[in-house]
Amino acid sequence: MPAKKLFSPDSTTPFALSRSKVELFMDCPRCFYLDRRLGISRPAGFPFNLNSAVDALLKTEFDSYRKSGEPHPLMVETGLRAVPHAHAQLDSWRNNFRGVRTVHAGSNLEVFGAIDDLWRDLDNGELMVVDYKATSKNGEVNIDAAWQVSYKRQMEFYQWLLRRQGEAVSRRGWFVYCNGRRDLPSFDGKLEFRISLIPYDGDDRWVEGTLMKIRETLSAADPPAINRNCEYCVFAAKATSEDRYRE
Image 1 (tube, one colour):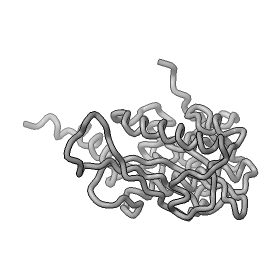
Image 2 (cartoon, one colour):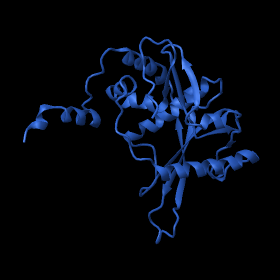
Image 3 (cartoon, rainbow, N blue to C red):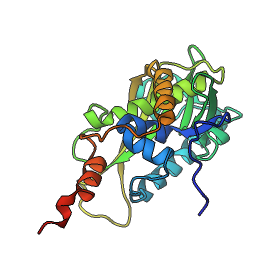
Image 4 (cartoon, one colour):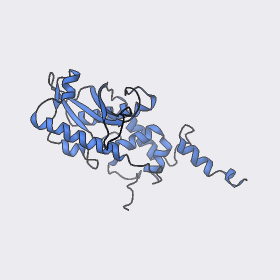
């Protein structure tokens, strides 16, 4: 496996940092430091292959309407005057290894993130960031749970990145939220989803200050203190304590 590209305080080259790593910093600065400075990552989670399949199929579906220049039926049903936007950079911006990129001069970080979709408001021409989500739960989906603040930050981060490309980006973004049905009498080899369009008005003013804090954290000689609200920090602290030798 290729060696990780770790942060060096002495380097003048912009340090590449993905949106997911920014979110890791928001979740736990210590885990972030261990990952990006020392190369000690959290244990990898299981891949969400079904979610990836939904993501790919949604992109194909919305791309067909993008090609024809017509609104998707979900837009019509919601009363949203918009169409999928045919931007020349969309394929690159969707790519996980390229994404939308910018160098933030204050922190010397090259930050990037891969968007799911872009829609264009037909009334004012602004671009709307769109993110696909998939789950399976009883009841209606929403973005009101405390843990879903990460979804909101994700949207805001993409909005900030696109504004740095000179795009006119609406504060209002949309989540295309697919909820797998559990109330059907049989499986029959297929999943059915109820799909909701959920609006969210983002505020990206947190981004630049956070990038400066990230730079300061990475430049420190030692990692931040153990975060008692982080299950990984707590586990590591217990695993390395002398108590493990006691019977």
